[in-house]
Image (cartoon, rainbow, N blue to C red):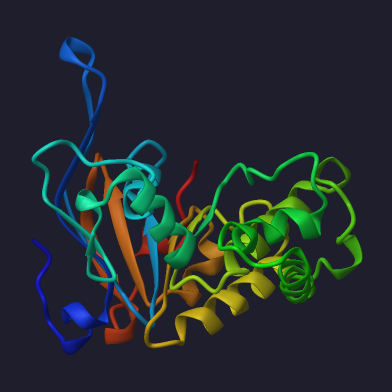
Length: 257
């Protein structure tokens, strides 16, 4: 278990709290254990990054934090803003995610028949907002991510980097308390990657919000408050940048996919 060393680890200051989390796929001889007793705290006011080689369990872990995957039966604690995710029904989990979590998928997951504005409006429409108010907010956030001149375009008319920025806008539009990102800057050039990270930093500066990022992109490591190194289904080291811990050489050069 990770040691609790300061007041920012108090339950009221944690966006997510995981202890002894296990996740397996398959049955019998084909059963594969992907997460092996993971402990993780995601602190409010921080950008926390998960790094490590491909296949080590990073995406599985953030999917559990987001409530889109369940832990193994009898596994440990998974709480997000004090809510035990294991106790939520499917409907309650959907409502909790809609209100509290913004998820940025590596594959974008944009709806191909909708324009950028319509795609970004979806989380607000799910919350019951009117189309007019949802699209107004969608246009505002698209401007922030540098997509103001592409609002009426559909995903097929956009580059990969442009689709990524639309996906980021969609995750931010309903002001979720926890932003979870799977490789959010992988398709972005340096300028747009810096723009997106500046937005994430503005989110994380709030004392009741947090950002959790899976990344191989060492260009964005300087934006992190904490970096958790994963390998073989476990978190093997936590680097607390706030506490002045220097990054080891392997993190300075990043991880290869």
